[in-house]
Structures are given as C-alpha cells and as structure tokens.
Image (cartoon, chains in turn red, blue):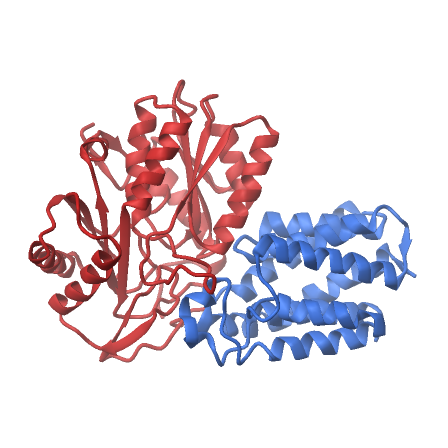
Length: 330
Length: 199
C-alpha cells in the first residue's frame, strides 16, 4: 500500500509539525504531543481536554479552538495517548475553573485518562470526566468492553465547548456533555478495510463484493458481513439501527461522517437517503453536518450519528466556534 | 536469591523477545484487534531497557517500579496501563530489599496480577493477558520453567474462547478461533523470567 509518509515511526510527529505550520492559533508541542489553544488558559472558563489514538483526524486536534476543545492529546495510530500527555495538557489549560476530560469508551483510553486524572488532581487541578459511548453496533453488556465512542464525540466536544465558552461552571459543562452523549447514537459501515502505517497491509480481508456492517473506527471488523448494498439500503439499515435504540422524540442533529476514503459526492448522496429514512420515520432534522470528521485512516465507508436536541442544546450547537475543522459564527 | 541484576536481565530478555516476536504479535492483533500490539510493546520495552541503564536502580523493587512507570509513559493503549501496573505493583510489593527469594517474588507477582485484574476488570477465561498470567503465577512455585510452560499453554488455550474484554469483545463470537495477542505477549514476559534465570 502506497502512503504519503516518510517512515511509519514518524507519522504522528510529522503530522503535528504540519498542524503547527498550518494553524498559528494553536500551540503544538510535538515532543510531548499536546495541541493547545494559543490563548489558553482562558480566564473564567472550564477547559476541555480530549485525546485518543491518531488516525481519526480531524478528531481531536482539529477541534481545538474557541468554542470547542482547549487541548487535545494524540496517541500513536489507533493507540490511546499516555497519562503524561493529558496531565501536561490539563496543567497547561486549567484557568482554575477546572478541566473536563472527554473520553471515548475504549479500554485503553479509559485507563490512561483515569491515570491522568489522578496525576492532575495531585497537582490540585479539579477534573471531571465524561465517557462517550454512542455506537449501537456493540451490545453493551457484561460480555463486551461496552459501546464504543465514535461520531457523538464531535457533538459532545462542540456543545460542551459552547457551554464552557459561556463561562458555565464545571458541573454544568459536565452535565451538558453527558446529556449530549446520552442523546446520541451511531452506526457505521465499511466498504474497505483500513491499512495502518505500521502494518502496511489491510487489517482484515474484505472481498470486493461485500461490506462490513457495524464497524468501529480502528479498523476492527464489524458484527456482520453482507453482499454489497446500495446507499439507500445502507441508510435504511444504519438509521433504523440507531432509531431502534433512540426512539425519536425531539428533533435531531445529523452527522453523516465519512471514514476517510469515501468521496463527499457519495457522502452527500448517502445523506439524501438518510434524510429520506428519517422523514419516513417522522423524525425532524434540526441541523446536518456532512463530511470526514471522525475517520479511520484510509477506510472507505460512513457512519450516521443522531443527537436528539432540545432548544438549549440546539442553541449551544449553533454558538460560534473557530477550530481548524469546524468553524462558524466567528 | 534474586537481585536487581536478575530483574534487569528479565526486562532485557523480554525486550529482546518482544522485538523478535513483534510482527507475530501484530499479526495476532489484526483479526481481532487493531494491528498494533507488537509495535506498541516494542516501543515500551525498548524504553524500559534505556531507562534502566540510565537510572541504574539498585533494588529489585526499584527496577520493576521504574520499568512499570516507563511502560505507562510510553506504550499507551490498554497495554501500557495494564503491563505498567503489573510491573509497578509487583515492584512495590517487593519493597526495598536488596535481594528477594523466589517465594517472595511469586507472592509479589500475584499481587501485581491481582492489581491488573482489578484495573482492567478481566477474569480468567475472558481471553486476555490474565489467561496466561494466572496459570504462570500458580506454577511459579515449581520454578520459572514451569511458569513459562503454564503461560504458553494458557495463551494457546485462549484460541477457542470468546473475548469478553478489550477490543476483541466487539466481535462477539467472531473472536473465537484466534489466539489472544495480550496473552501471547504475557507468555513472552514470563518466558523472560526463565531466560533471566538461565533455565
């Protein structure tokens, strides 16, 4: 597999140097792998710190900026960051109002953020944590590591970031983040397997005529494999899987998210089908975002995330944001 | 009796075997994980060997505590905190004695494995590193060679199991038929003990 890299060992550091060059609003510590808003700490505001394995860009580094994250900690490709990174980020961004850790629910991320919280609390920093676990493809039971955090991470980071920017206290920002997660569900499909730089070949074998339903964002196979379906059939399957778990009551935010290698032309076509299914099910769409936001390197495919919003959450979603990957209103 | 040098040899032997087996570990991690177990541990144990050379800790407890801290700081993923906690907790249980008996070490390692189970929430049979570590600790009374054999058997015995922890658990029944990469690397760690002892 050809890749636009130098050597696999330096892909993360190389990308961070490139981010620093592209985004003067960010302070990028390449050696310690921490991306911080240049004007942090911001007086009177709760700071939001997230992080996770690399390979999901623009998540999380692309969401650092006013109205969203205060700092992000990228790990190795598909490997959670180490506690030292988040502890360093927390120390760099805490204004005294406290720090919210936004953690996708994977065993490694949970353990490393827990250890980081201990380190930060030892330094006198007030830390709250919210877990994102929106992926309905995984059965949440005693027999699994629990639902994965995927597309809803974007909603949590944006909406909680808006609450923090208004100067809401840590308990409120945490409660908003939790509310967004509880009201969000996702389902993803893959049309191709992912190739990590370290391995250089696809992580699983997906024949040309088949697709994988219920995939995550780490190249891990999904729950079920079927003969290739049309965009409309995939939308029926994915949206119904989400609605089965999140019975429609309120209007929804829709994220039609590309996995990295699916063109926007296909994503927009898929969004038309998603909208059709939602209309058939009587669900009102408040806002829609289409694009590559929570990706899985070079995987082809897409995920659908729905987040039910009340007026307050919708107001926070519409609030101004200025980050490399998401910006409006400022 | 086991001195600090024995534990340094243990870490060096593990670093060497992880280096040799990195591709195999990553290959095992591909069908049921995310294809990075080998490279992550390779990076971690390389850093362990480097910090042990630099800081030259004087006691068995200090060697393992430092090694564990270094794994936590360099590996990431679930493996970093879990392997790091295993070594750090074992090191703490050894205290600051200049030498420890094999029985004292066995007891400390059991405390370390208990800590890993508490942290990760895994029990024997969940298709994790615990499936190699628990049999190894149970066999440690019969010597390092017996522990190595028990760990290897434990790792192989994960093949028919369905994963209930970690990323492989997302696959449900499709995780059956694959040897767990974490149990496999744990067997390498235990084999490093036998190697350090010259067995």
